[in-house]
Length: 460
Image (tube, rainbow, N blue to C red; front, side, top):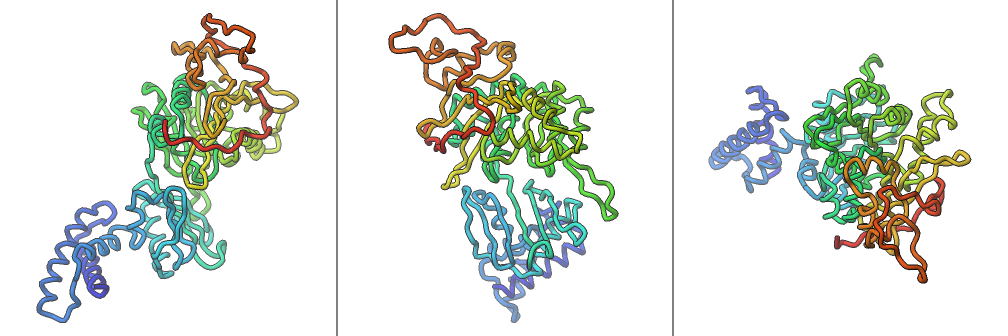
């Protein structure tokens, strides 16, 4: 069958070239050409020495993948369970399913890897060469491509394709997947509507982009949202949305558009809300200045915990220049960031929210205080005693913040807003204040040990 595939593929490529068909933009037309060529080949094979076709469906798939897809990798790109594909060397192709990696049986030739990378970059307008040995690009289906070439790598190209697997596009679907509990989801939904500034933290593949998409889905539809990313990954389901991505320099080293420039330009576009896909470097300073100028926003940061994420947000702006100091950054972070949502991926590959931390805005001895709103207790994400800042914003929405947070603890509203009553004390029956104070005992400086590791139960 291999000989038949090679002959049919050669004939299909020739017809595609003659008819001027673009395989990327018009795969349906290529599919028709493939079926016509296979039918004609089968008739000729009956009266000649051509190798038999065998399974026509399998041959059609192989030829279509080679001409209009990404060859041997296309089967993994089409597999809905595969989240990421990476090539360490031509004979080692790995995939990740449900957060766990596995070595595949796909074996490529070095020339195939080069050809696949060139084909993947063709539609993006980006390049990879000795002057630019790294490249980030977006494939036509929205997957994210990252390539590193020798001599940065030792022997072979290192290729990563991170598929955009839409596991959830709302907080409700994250609850269904077991990533989030219903009370925490309701709180986050109201917090987004109230305009609180939220940072999503976690490690690689922890689900930060999925969480950011779900939070964006809770933005009121009347708002104008501007997103800034290195490559397009966010899918914001709103009518008034503008998405921007960076641009790499050209061959002469000019024309680069960094993420810092995008964040600055976003302020000139009448934003109701700004979303930065991922903060890695000095653009963190520009993002903080946006949040501190009255424009609500969200972003994601790589970090091991919510409090470490705050520390990182305090450190990254220092990369912007020597004139930026901790004395400026720390109070700016305390005043700009309202909530931190931290996610983790466990040993089984399941992604879960570990904690939701509030930033009350207080700074003592150069340390930002943080208070747990939801944390892990006995292997479950539960409501603890912290409160979010800006309770007046919740009140403007007509939301009883005390009652909302009481749902997470499973207590009647009369028990919310103060410390637990002593056994000898009677629990008051009066309705709680709509602006409960932040219990000082629950606030902890950034950098304090985080809550223990937990696992969210499947039942929600």
